[in-house]
Amino acid sequence: MTTAEEIAEFARANMGALNERMGIELVDVTPDRVVATMPVEGNTQPYGLLHGGASVVLAETLGSVAAALNAGPDRFAVGVDINATHHRSATKGTVTGVATPLHRGRSMASYEIVISDEEGRRVCTSRITCALLARDPNPQG
Image (cartoon, rainbow, N blue to C red; front, side, top):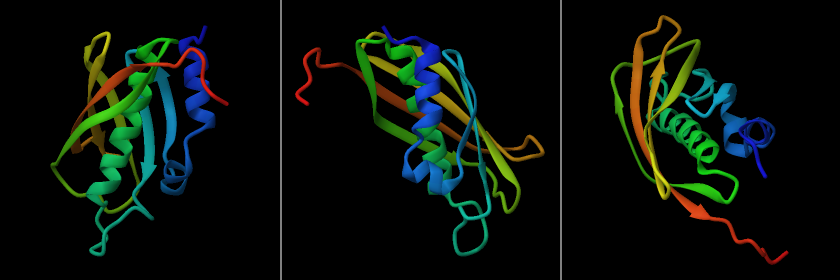
């Protein structure tokens, strides 16, 4: 059986190449709240502003980890829909994303992700929906 702590530890240890390249770091991982940071530097568009796609990557990471925590040991989470509203630009420092649940069902879970700058100003609001799929009890290796 997989516990929430085991899933959180797995997520921290296996962020994946894109998240590592973008400098995303998980800060707090619980079933009710997942928090991560990301540097603005290295994740900007040509005008020096935080790239909107970088915000979406941060949001999808947070929502997917949160959904995995809530999926349970016999299921896994896959994103099926994400949207983002970009409220203001960030040009330096670090942004912080916080994912909180909107709906946690047996087969679907939705999360709101709020991304803020170092002054606590909202940079982006995102929403993700993940399907919670059954794990194959006899995977082919």
